Image (cartoon, rainbow, N blue to C red; front, side, top):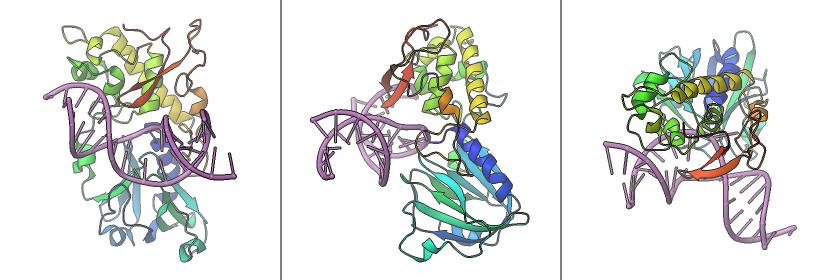
Length: 295
DNA sequence: AGCTTGACCTGGAAGC
DNA sequence: TGCTTCCAGGTCAAGC
């Protein structure tokens, strides 16, 4: 799925079309995704004007004039796209048997500048979900999250505190959304490679006995920031089915140093190593055994 | 308590 | 061609 850079790319693609638009109607083509759609979702949306399109970690937050907020997670394969701009009735396929199999939710919206269009949420694996809150910050999905990795709250001291005594591999620790929110399998691998840290070392080994961050932990913070900023700049990564809201690809996959590059040469200058794939916590980890070390 | 594994789903690629 | 197996950007509950 969409990790933080992909969700931010989606947000930026949606915002100019959704903000200030009025939701005319909402169609649900099934009762549930990962969870059931909220019972009152359709009436809560219809007639509302969209006031904001935000993001927290990997969650999209769509503000409504009623004061409520739609919280949407894309799971592994969720996507938003626009279809058939400028028409004022549902696409024909919603009146027939030809509804695209994974188009689960459709909003017909009317924007003061762009006119009418259909916003479609598709999600083949249905790991995503949509929920509705009066106060999204109190939702169980957001309350336990760690800081945004591009905020000042994400720093080496925070990681040192979180990692003190932690025996889990640093790879797993960085995927823990309670520590820092928004990283996933791709960007953790890329950040660890940039910081030259072996993914298998214990998270606690990056903290001194006094509880201070070691140099490598400072490097890791910089690497996480760098890799996320660069990925957002090029529209995220497109591996299989990720598309931005305009239907286009991201380009960061062309810059992967290690992710999905088993057997390829390590791009670190003068390294000469070969990328390997291992499994940690049931998920692939890619790294270079030559330049990623136990600090 | 902390950490790992399995389950949730579908579809595409690779192997035979 | 067709069948089987494996794998996938995430998260949570259950298991050790």
